[in-house]
Image (spheres, rainbow, N blue to C red):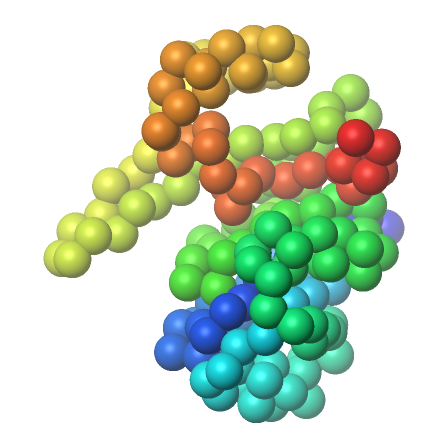
Length: 172
């Protein structure tokens, strides 16, 4: 049986891009998902979109909270999450169809976090991003060293290209 993955989507006034984001999660080849839509006090049509999408797919669970920022929304998602693994997706992002599958395949018993490649889309062109100096496993210290070496690089400093073991996040 596949492990449950909790996909946490923090949203603030994301109505214009939310359906595209959620649809990219719904079509994942990895099917055992709960999709937590954490509406951080949006003042646009986000609530209506969340409710409409929930009616279309039972894996979606909207949570509506007062505005407090993306960190508060992600933390609320962590409280709500029931999955063994956590994946964060910002509401203006989209996932490749097999993104979750690839991350889960690499989440072995001795791994707490998996980092994946991604594609950055600019007006009119796309760039494939793969910036680890080596493939394979890193210790926490090695990962931190890479982050400090290049702190502004998206590969290390964001959470939307990663999957985390839920119990590790909760312990730390």
